[in-house]
Length: 382
Picture (cartoon, rainbow, N blue to C red):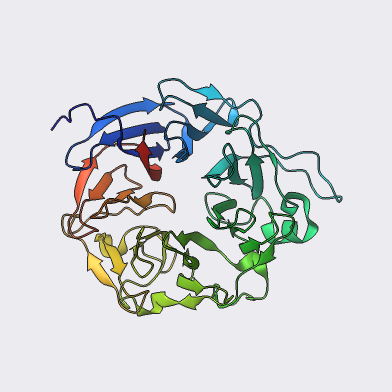
């Protein structure tokens, strides 16, 4: 079905892929979609995010084979784009450490409403950057990029995940812009309470792969960390070794993924939190056995939900393929909206975009045959 042109305020899905970006528009009914794209056809788009403070400004992280990593900015919802004047880039090496170059900007996070124009970015290899002018110019942020201890935790260019080491899950406490979190694959989770002047590890209770020392921060591999919108003192994490919850001011993570079905396990990449209920969480498990094939378990994809903070989990697969579906979902490629009946969305490594209008009870496919999907974000468009 072809959707009518949406009203002035509407919902959009921002889809970043291996070969470009697409924007899917809908209204509050979420029954039909209008596609806009591709944007940046052929570019690797790692992340595309709308500024919630104005409902118009888009940032897109791009990499090209000829021009390398950069950022693009649009103030008219993608009708036109301008390249950042100064994208994230490492400066001259300090402290006698080896020089590094940004491979891609992997993660984008807008600042709080009290700081209009502020954005944060995480890169591969691990680096933390900040913009104060709406994403036009970027500079290294905090001390971590050239701190000898953090550089040890980063590992080398050859270390980390198959897609390369990365800094991700940048979180700003909505009550205090000086309270920040970020995570690294690999390198653990870290917290600052002084606006980024210092960061300290936050890894107590997290498991690591058997045979490695849990006291070595570089072996910790958080895949995605999220803060509860309705309760900023609760965080959830999908890790290389399980699903976790943290209740502040505590500092020890609890592995709630042990309550998942044993034949499914608790390995995956994304974690999504209900916008109004800190006990409701959705994850997308993947096969984490043997060589980590990074596919749905047994080729039977499903979302799993908890509505009691991780004590119990429910399989949600109505409408999803019953078998022979050997894809998975990357850490940025699953999200939720804020409608009364929360909508859920995810994009797959095989280029399918799925959605549910009823918190995962039923699923339908919005689009097929896209390139591999790297990220999906919801946006309330002004």
